[in-house]
Image (cartoon, rainbow, N blue to C red):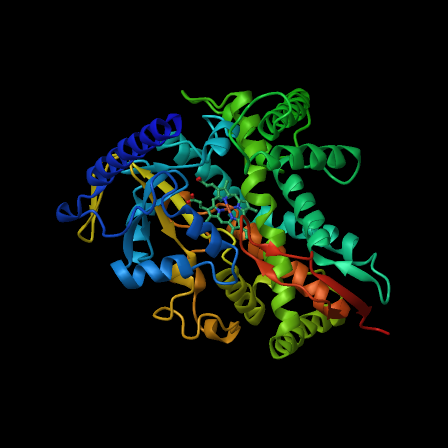
Length: 477
Ligand code: HEM
């Protein structure tokens, strides 16, 4: 009879479990008080499996679309182990992003929270956050920085693409990753090509791998190795900073280390410590590293698939190239960002690729927006991709159509938030646009290419499946 009692015990456990879950759901089911409608799915796993399954398809926003049709633009769900309110409403998103620090704080998965120090810009709040964000944003916006970075980017792009031979198979993802890493490391800490760059690249890859892993920090685990790599990166940056502090002839502000060091030299109550600067330099490599090469690679994919777009892009860029070689002048950053159709191509790539598809926040108190209650402690996912792929906002949203941006100022478009919004609006935006414009200019004006089979995948990160192989031929042949 032992199997009967076994069954009985199992049934009791199941009943208790179900009872606990119902109680939990009831506790979160405050629809009458304004909590958005929705389903919390299965006990423990909630709706995570469907969320991930949609991420593996070519239309990851299907998860949101289905629920939006059932419950409206803001709905509740249970994802990655916790109840979440999902917003696909650009006005609700705007309020959430603009009230960072007061009503909401950034929320990250556990492994990411462990890897980022408490003083990371990504986790900071309040005055210190505003100060650091402002310093970095102003650095990348300054004309002097843009003028110098333009030269650096040109150098990195040409170093890469000038080495391609006629008929060579080139993997665009590998090339753009190399370019973007060099540009980022120069902008942050002025490290140029050589052994140090290779060291940084190796250690950063190890550090980065810990961002999506099980949050178990034991010898041999991915998280453990990632933390060790971060410690080595911090040591490297600390040595750079010590060298800078000892240097007597200062050349002015050259990179983000200089920006933060300069701030410490000012008379101020809240001086930034060396550890604070090191941590932020290392952690700032994270948002900057994978995103830019992903946009450049996906832009090449879209151009390969849309010959009419490529034709117009080429005409615009050839015209600039002709003008510059006629005048014998170097390019300025303004030359690149003034290429209007090229900017349209970049906007459309950002809209469709949705490299950062959402921002995660946690409510610091009960907040009501547009009649929806977001209870204290709940996570809220402000979906950017649903808004970018919404027929209401963009006609034929799945059609790559750069002409839809003609005459529009994308940076102030309320339905276009690839760089987020509010206090955490991406400070790297100007660098990103410049870098992609320079890459596209030199790439399309030097090579014709035939793309091999590839496709875009969206989970856990947006990228091309086969590294975007293309066979290139220089224009002159
Ligand atoms: C295509 C490229 C990029 C995209 C799509 C992108 C997008 C974003 C988005 C959406 C946010 C806001 C996240 C949030 O609200 O939680 C953000 C924040 C941030 N980005 Fe970027 N980013 C890109 C490249 C870069 C680069 C190259 C840098 C490096 C200089 C950078 C530095 C940052 C930093 C430091 C933050 C945090 C700002 C804060 O919390 O105050 N990003 N980015």
